[in-house]
Length: 64
Image 1 (cartoon, helix red, strand yellow):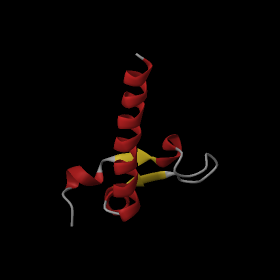
Image 2 (cartoon, rainbow, N blue to C red; image 1 turned 180 degrees about the vertical axis):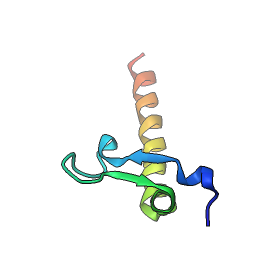
Image 3 (cartoon, rainbow, N blue to C red; image 1 turned 90 degrees about the vertical axis):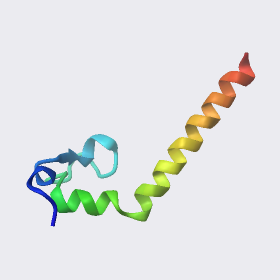
Image 4 (cartoon, one colour; image 1 turned 60 degrees about the horizontal axis):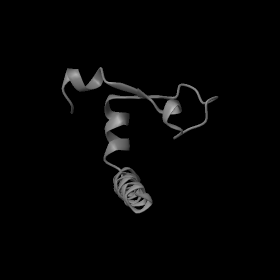
């Protein structure tokens, strides 16, 4: 089990576009948030974000 400090951390998933705005409750806290962060999809999206940033940087350099 997580520590009490971890259970007080909450993220509103609606503001990141992960779930629709009309979803209720739309907030992940504690163990539920930990499950989202440890999923394979989360790690894949992190790597795709890094690749997108590198591509944007390469585009800016190419325009110079």
